[in-house]
Length: 284
Image (cartoon, rainbow, N blue to C red; front, side, top):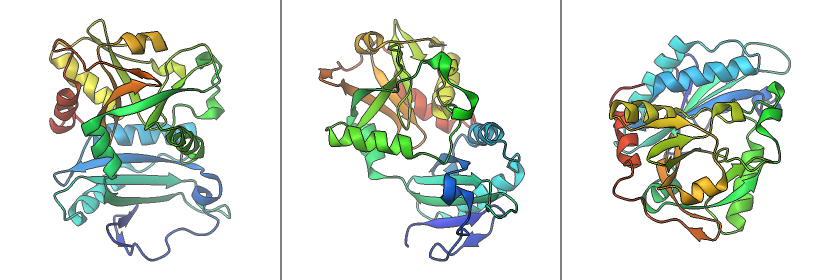
């Protein structure tokens, strides 16, 4: 397979070309599980505590047994050692309900190179379109798993295919009442009146590990941060809009639909630098 490392939940390195899942594993049959994507930089996994906490929250939302955080840390350490390259890597943890025929949950990790698109987005920014999600934030129901990073990711992937066919790099979901939500694969942060602003979690969005780390570091530098509802008008008038994710880190939104956004002013918080500090200062 090449450039793929597989580590099972016990920390054993597996042959990436050998079968791993049973045919009736509910990860494959129904996407019944959760996952996390972690950046390995300089052979060290970043924001591990945040990711494991979110994995546990997602498992709880799906009524899965709590993942063994200690075993996962040991498996992550093995994955770091196995990644011999100094280049960034993508570490994924997959945790499913296990076999339909019964048995324990399935857990394994993979390590692969970071996709080239992440470096391009970080360097050049992204063009996004506003995409209606079609629901009111207040109407989200627990069984819709809006705040869980579930394996059933087909809807988000379909959204990305749709916008890319239309010539965009990414999308920002908008609720039925016009509120900014999130990207299919990233959190939205805008500089509004000098304040780093992100949509509140009660709008049924996935809590972003990179966004939370950014806000912790920004607050330590006296950069104001807040969760607040935003409309498309707020985004278009912002002094910088960013999509934050574990692999891309910070991608500036260069255009929204047909509107080109200006480069952030010198007075705006330096989001890429703050994100770099957030993943480097052991604030996990």
